[in-house]
Length: 271
Image (cartoon, rainbow, N blue to C red):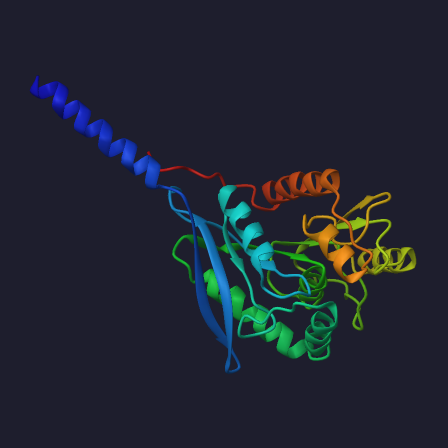
């Protein structure tokens, strides 16, 4: 009888440990040149040891729930993800005019943008659960353009992935400077990125000998990964549209990309 009770007690301990092991998400403040940046760190506390870290760079709306959601989705895949704050003080825009102003102010000072990105990079590298040699970055809309710029500038990343991001640049990539493998997802009906810009980007990456994979989706508009795109399009008369098929396909291809650049990583759950 005592053996049965003891076995039941051990089973309860195991059960409770399993139940309470879950995706954790927490706000985390950091700074760059005196500006407070408000990030969001997501991870699975049931995974043993160190794992790759992924930076998530937000759309032009700012660090909002969508960026945090993507960070949690990455945590579910076994990574540690940090949704970064590129605007400072956690600023978010409620209107496209304000979003445009925030984005333009950042893009007009790429030194500040890079300092903020590097601050986030150093923060995620310092996490005990992160393998500092295995870091990548993904970005949406504005964030897609940011991660591509960081790759062009030679920031030490294993890979970057851009979803419906800007492809243009004032300073094209130079041969030998880009360390990251590059993955780009683009909707062919995106009115913010022209076919000419796509061709120029491909030529730039080829000239710079960058390892590029470009995935395009016919008939797909800007912001195709964000389920809120349709509401935003209607509310503000913007050429945006969510596309479930492209969203799912791009997320699946991102996972393959990560398996390629983080070849030796395998998530191991505590048992």
